Amino acid sequence: MNYPSVIDSFVAKNDNSNDVMAVDINELQVAIVSLENKVGISGSAVTTSLDYLIKLAADPGHTHTVYELLANKSLNVTTDGASDTKYPSVKSVKTYVDTMVAGLLDYRGAYDASGNTYPASGGSGAAGAVMKGDLWIVSVAGTLGGKTIHIGDYIIAIIDTPGQTDANWDTLDTNLGYTPENIANKVTAISVSSTDTQYPTAKLVYDQLALKVAKDGSATTGNLMQFDASGNAHDYGWSPALFAPVRTIKSGTFASGSTTYVMTDASVDVNTIVDVYAQATPIGGWSVSSGSGSFTITSTKTETSNVAFKYILNK
Image 1 (tube, helix red, strand yellow):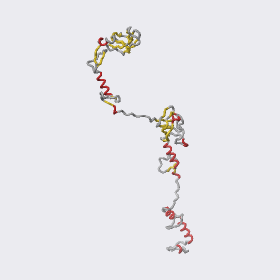
Image 2: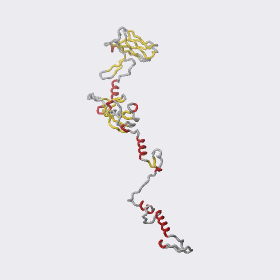
Image 3: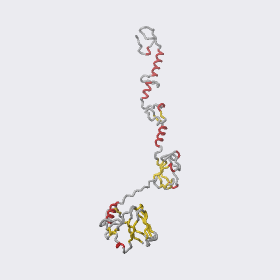
Image 4: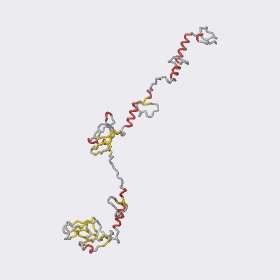
């Protein structure tokens, strides 16, 4: 079979078994140009050919037109949050972020509370509207919602547009002080050099009191204690001689089966202080009230047996 080597050499031939089919040269050229326009050949200048477009795409200096893939554009980040294919619009990102930060603390500056009203402007909302989480620090004291607000206190809106409703605001009092122990003036012992600036530990107080109640024997219920010059206590019992120079010691008996006992004594008046000392442990606790010509002992419980007592009148 014979094939032409150059396109321009194509000529009409008779159809036979050894020759190619007769082709019109113009039709063949039209076909080749059409193929070049679709696919392109190396070095093609046809701007619609694939060869030309491929070379253009590889040119770093060429400006390419990129088209948005609308099918994958997300207008709601929350709804499409699980997708790795979709991409968000700027507005959807802003809406999502605004939602996430809504209600977080937002410092709005110092606030003069001397007008005794909560902030009505200067908030984080549109045109300065007060929004949830807006926070001010008080620079001038005042009274808000019936509460005294001090310098340094915090005022926080807990809902959007809280107005002047006290329940819509939180206040944080920062004026809580701390005074450390005055270690330098704490003492664990006293002496002649002790001062009025010093203070004792609890143990020192206990130890000193224990020294004062030390006695030379066991005390008996109803007996009197006296201190000697050294501060030691002594149980002297009920010796009338101890009180004879000062006042008279008298006796009585609280009758059983009662919660009160009236002791008649002409020396008693309403201004007399009566010291009563039970000679046995009573059932209840006793109290004494003075009257004209008598005094009354009242027990918190009914005494189940007679209780002897001694008493001293203090004028």
